[in-house]
Image (tube, rainbow, N blue to C red; front, side, top):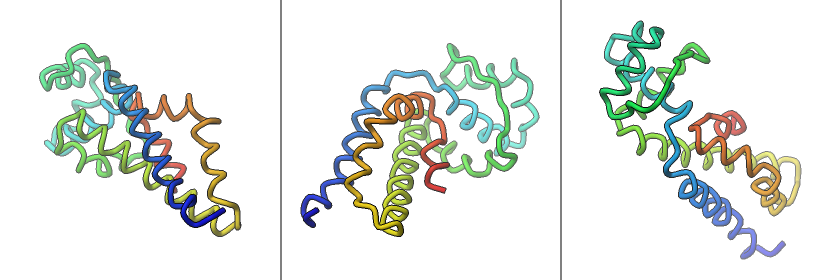
Length: 151
């Protein structure tokens, strides 16, 4: 492939993720709410409340997400430390920042693997096609699958 067309591949991927974010912009917090509010409670020193489903959902409701049902499960054990910086932002902004960051890291990781294996990076354009539903679910729910692929 020519150098100019290879430079457009990351742009295509970022366009893809931006389109998914726009498509899913009205989605509920989903799994992201568990990560976000769990980290927020732990940062406040009230982490035990995260394990009481009534207290946890009340906390989310008081913070503007009263129509969301959350059930906190700490996976892995130090996840609240990882998500803490995002809990400093409003929930929607934090979910967007986390999604864009994790997709960019995933793309960087895929590019590194392709380079090491000497696979043309243009093949990465097939990922959004083959894994569209998984990618959409990841963005809608605020899941960490892009980040796990990056690792």
